[in-house]
Image (cartoon, rainbow, N blue to C red; front, side, top):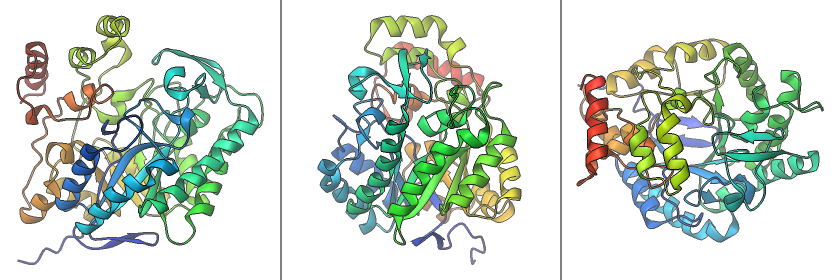
Length: 411
């Protein structure tokens, strides 16, 4: 029987043609070492390419030293172009395109990682790091915007087909956009139009560097996920501004890592698991005591961002990438054929099974075996991202927590 659905038809992101409409989302793998790529990072993304995905996205690559939160993140610089080329060559050899997410973490780092006092839109204290933060000077902002452009050129040299600019989730561009983190009194603060100024400058450099041979995606919020942040109406204005700046697709997401992290991924954060892998004893005990307050849960449902994303689909003409709770071929077909999104991204489904896309192609009734326990998320900032279903001999405390969440989820 002929498959009449669009999911497995070719589609383009600017100058880049994908074999199908599936993209491995820019979900942080934690598979770097000393801010360099590793064999483990290569093996994972190659396995996703072999599994049938249209494009896989390596995440996250800092555009400069101050952009880094962890040593397991990539620092996109000339020294790693060769090793990254080894990864992209192998991805291409298996029929997929390669993208890399570029960004700056802003206030979500420490002096030991960033090499200096963490910077952000405004001076203050980030309770979630925790660390003091210095507001950026205008000359530094100009420099960072240029780093975004340089990152595009480095990505091209490393064999990537696309870049994904991280402008959401409470990272630096998002910190300028959100009234929660931007308290500036100059032309970069105050009104939303002013708060979008830094984003415009970064995008100008990105699009200039991208030229006519690199695809550009931008991850943007539809809601910051809490009352004091951006809501849908303002996020739609931001999305329309991005549309005018020239990228080839927008990735519609939401949430704020330092305030509402589970709004991004949904479900409960396994606090015992997260603290088990932490190295700092004081942080371990603080999170065990206050973690449920600091990281509030948001119920997981399949296609959990769909209602919001429909608003953006109605108002925007450019290609849009849906992300959030795609767990089956039925979900995927709904997003592409019924809702009119050009592409979809998946993270946990492809961590659970890198061959998920091929299995959806072979079986229209296929569903992900991901249980949405979020073990993978709880450990990814201390160790590499991994699904609990793939691991043996987990500590008893972690097994108990997994079982508790499983029962709560009705599994």
